[in-house]
Image 1 (cartoon, rainbow, N blue to C red):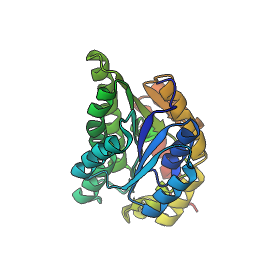
Image 2 (cartoon, one colour; image 1 turned 90 degrees about the vertical axis):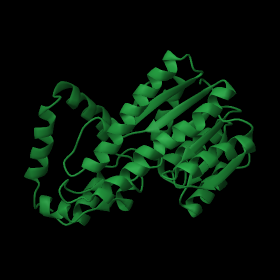
Image 3 (cartoon, one colour; image 1 turned 120 degrees about the horizontal axis):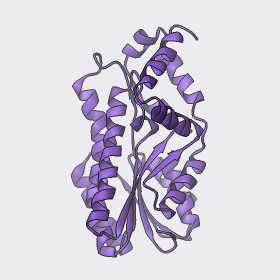
Length: 279
């Protein structure tokens, strides 16, 4: 998809962060918008910022709700006439040792981060194929490339998005579909994900530091702006890239995994251990 002008894009998690930045950039390119988020206030703010130059519709949506996502996809086509891109951006974070996290914790993050992506892809794909052109953009993470201690639930969900999207892209090529797909791996982006994350008490026990300290340190690592991330994603769609890495940290981690495919785990664990108890 070389141009977004006159097209319609559906975006989940559009109430803030990367989702909002994508909406504003697409609106600037003359792309009509179907925006969804659980945050009604943030969603309304994004719609207002997008301005009157394009058609904007909004829906309060929980991407874990299969029926709601399918209903939203049908409503988008009814409201806009067609849809040409789905950006499955909504996601959450979870930290804790594997032993401490409950099965409910894992189900919670997988329902949103993985099943939300599957729901969005499956609901919109037939509509895009009917339109004769389209693109699926699924947000994984650099932690869908490299595993981290205390992040087993998050890693599992983002690795799953990566595997799903890479296989999807091959399916689309194999069947001659007019739709393509891109998997996005952001590094540290300045969004609200750290503040909204679920952090189990086991993180403090494992690191010797209060969970709030770990969250604050993580936030300091969020160096790339959402607008820069949005530009990189949309440039990747225009080039029909299979994989998009965002931020110098993402490129560095990807290179480390390529060079040290198993040894990197010892390095990361060693760094965390060396900082145990330090403020």
